[in-house]
Each structure stands twice: as structure tokens, then as C-alpha cells.
Length: 88
Image (cartoon, rainbow, N blue to C red; front, side):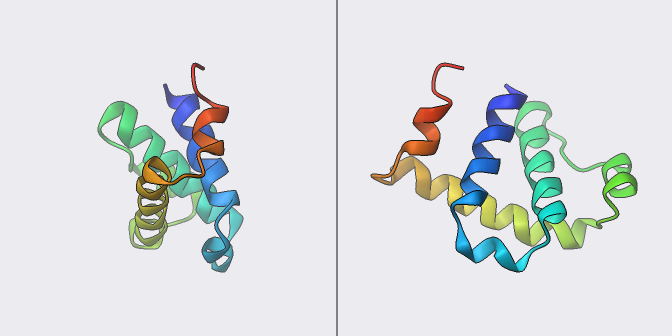
């Protein structure tokens, strides 16, 4: 579900020191876009750009880092974030 993806990606970003270089609002926008993409197949739209104030080119690098974090978390021995939302 949208909430599961949103919560999982949000928590993954909290654990990653490498993301401190981005504004929290940019991380939040990227998490929403990634979660929407998984659920609907289309994450980015004009409304998100308008209300977030970020362009696709600003969001894309953060989304790529979130995707990498997610891939690593699936095979990592540290499964805390995934277990937290399991079954919800």
C-alpha cells in the first residue's frame, strides 16, 4: 500500500547519514514520488512540482539513493525497518 511504501522509505532515509546533504523537504518529496510510482506507475506530476517547489532534476538523485537503500535493505542482515511494517 501507499502507506507501507511511504513509511518504509521514510524510515530508511532516517538511518542513512549520506542523505543529510539534502533538505528534509526534498527527501520527503522524493519519498512521496517513489511511493506513488510503486503504487500507480506514475510518481512525478505537475502538482508535486508546484506544491513542493522542486523540479524533477532535483528529486531524481534523491530517488536514486532511496532506491539503492531499499535494495540494500532487502539483502541486509539489518531488517529492522522492513520488520517494523511487516503485515501492515
